[in-house]
Amino acid sequence: MTPEKYGLVYSDAAKKLAECYFPGALTLIVNTAQGGTQAVRVPEHPLIFELLKYFDEPLVQTSANASGMPDALSCSQALSQLDGEPDVYFEGEDLPAGAAGSTIVNTTVIPPQIIRQGKLAVKF
Image 1 (cartoon, rainbow, N blue to C red):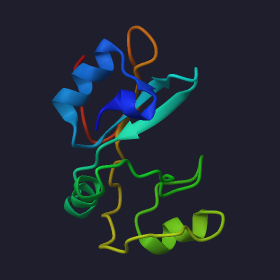
Image 2 (image 1 turned 90 degrees about the vertical axis):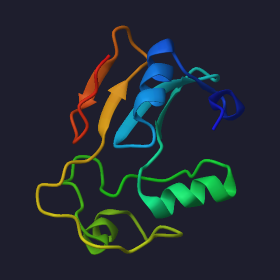
Image 3 (image 1 turned 180 degrees about the vertical axis):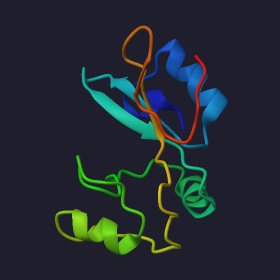
Image 4 (image 1 turned 45 degrees about the vertical axis):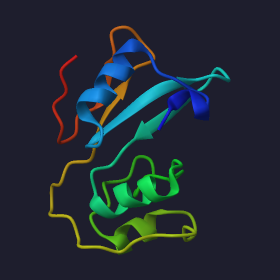
């Protein structure tokens, strides 16, 4: 994915982190050309990664849980937290209790800030 094609502006830190950790359990908050911010992730799940390669376009999606709610560990938990059913979802195996989400790093500030520590330990 070329970030500029989608109006995303990667800082040097975002480029370095993406090169090191994508695909993986990392979410980057980056600037947009319109002056806002956007969260970006390239997941390591084989099915989603194949979809991304097949369509050669990003997928726009919500988190699997509502803001402020506990992480959803199953499809039924995620659906119960979301406002209405999503257009598409894939039901897979439940995650184990205590499973950590992605690490979220805000790369729009210097130095980058870890917003949520997930299962991935990043080095700047």
